[in-house]
Image (tube, rainbow, N blue to C red; front, side, top):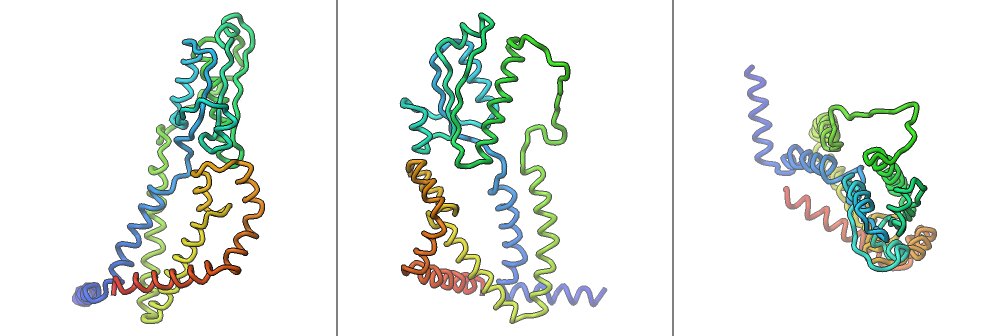
Length: 277
């Protein structure tokens, strides 16, 4: 027991002398938990859509309300053509409700709701397509408009996570990963100290460099979302996606951008280590 107590006192004294160890033991796991648990999202929500209701009847408004009740879409105001909204990046999808929407349904005639989806992001486009189909089927059933009853009806209920909140299962998983990685990482660094400091410095330098590289506004990097926010035409964005790799090579080796990124990453890693020294 005395040996364990002496070891604990020794480690606490080490924490007081070395703030870098405190940052690695406390701040880094907390940052990982918040970033992967709450900042990164796999579910698609608040998808901007444009709807042109040419019928403007109670039935068409009820259809729009049920579509918005999925909590996946965000209605965007747009007075022009839906194709123009897709090209400018204002909306990811658009729906056109025909003028005879309610009259054709009340007279038992088929009607068509035209849906245009931006297919730049294939996964997002698939989610939008499935949401429109599921909402249309649910609208027909709840409104009593579906004439033929299928032979098989699947009644699906979500257990344990009915609200489909990702944090309920991502956060416990990230917590387990943190308990698995960081104790062994701290033990390995303590065994090879001070060479472990050099390893951490190189890891910080590489991480900062990759962060700056990923912020470049060139598809398919994440920085290209700036171009979408700037509402450039979709055709221009697709052409940049085709030749993005060549453009990156030209920027990195034919200009001073690559050298600046290396110097900025080195200076950032140095200041980070001096902060916790």
